[in-house]
Length: 176
Image (cartoon, rainbow, N blue to C red):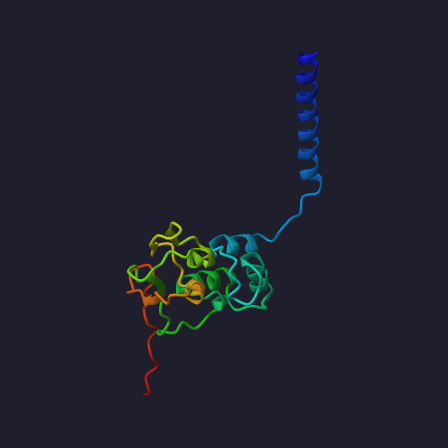
């Protein structure tokens, strides 16, 4: 009796798996490959700072022309330039774009946990009622954590430009 039950469930699993595999091929929804490639390079935090619900919706709006390539404040100039190149549009890059990263004054941190709950990128680590800290390589500078800190020990500091974030300034037209 036990062997019959095992064989039944194995066959049932195989039949349902085959049915799901067939259904995934028949009902497959084709998407725009440009939207997929733009979404792949976006931060993926679904923070909504660009004005739409998530990165997929932002990529779709950019392809439709409803959203500028520089709409994602988290990606900075490098993401803006990559998206503009993919879309074949030109964007003006300002020299005053500053990259920010969160910084916790650890001596004042009570470990309430509100900051790491607010961070959509998991850039803040720490245990309950213990000191928290920011992983600066993961932090995108979205500033969502600073609004949630009741002690005011979380601030945003400017990141020094490096080869990953620095852009060559555009030449100025001469008045000749």
